[in-house]
Length: 190
Image: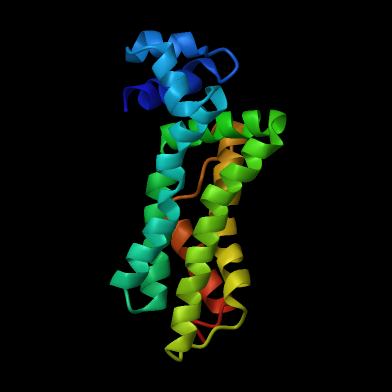
């Protein structure tokens, strides 16, 4: 949708506070009345601007879990795909906007966390539960393992966003080492 694409670009370029809804309408076309009808307000537009990227984490986990039988292969593939999807320039920039706005609006922060991290963590916990039900040994509870695995990515993404690249994410070689370390701790590699 044109409103969402324009808002995402303007929020990244100008910042959330310095972007007006009139700016979005000017760039996207349409009317202010339509924008209000679709999104309610600027916070609703921000939520829409980040939701397509953010919600896809749970979908990615479910898809990879269905395609890969081997947990180590699945987690390695998941880690690589998450790194590619969420660590591009736009992904990091929009997280900066979300972090800044979340400080001002705790309800937005709560809803963003529920739509993104909570859903991804639940999907990954379900995948661990499925593996356990197939007889795969896990050295921990599925929810805790899911939180630990995703925590590697959330930490890097937030560090990169806050530092403006000064603490850039590691290369895939380092990612594979982290995933292997996680798999050993989770009891998947003995």
